[in-house]
Image (cartoon, rainbow, N blue to C red; front, side, top):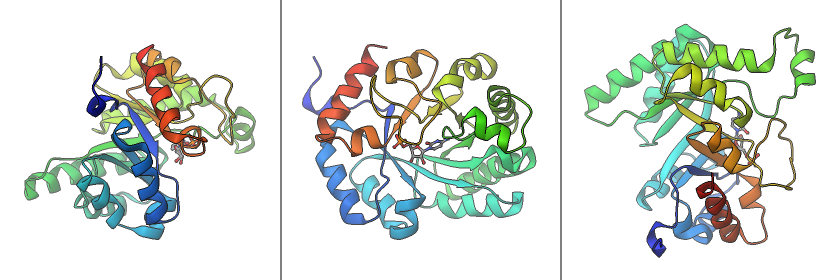
Length: 243
Ligand code: C5P
């Protein structure tokens, strides 16, 4: 039997896709001990900034700072080193920024962490957004399959020294096979059976994503927009245990 203090599961990352500190705090309070890991994305970070990361760390939560950096190598590496001081556990870049950008980013982050005597945050790469459907993919001019591109990006990220990738749960099994046991696979696009897809396309249930090799599940609307968010989180954790 789990005690009250260990109902959470570090594999569940709840997306704090809200606009204000007040809304962030009220969701974190409502979810209480059931959730230990939060994702702060551009909506919240651009409006609230660094204090939201400090707030979560003071509450003992882990933080995935999902700012999806995408620019030339020097700029992304510098940006990541600036972000590192906030104390987030995971930072990320777009693999579409290229191998040189990922490699320089990983090297700069490790060097800065060592220099400052800090633990280096994990650095992961976005492969292909889970909202992109095969139709949209073709419309963007790609002739390859989405899955092949995701695998290519995951391989490049690993070779560049990154710790893992963000990918759809449908691609997790192939990435696990190609990139080995230690590679982080963070999967958004998680929907409990029968739930709305919203704007996501390449989705899976929590248990299926974990069975496919995902290490972390990013869940936003199925918890945040639920009538009872804490119940929805606990139900999801239960589904995860059954994987
Ligand atoms: O509400 P929902 O569960 O769809 O939220 C998913 C979260 O994961 C959002 O914050 C979205 O920005 C993020 N995300 C994603 N697909 C990616 C990377 C991140 O949906 N490839």
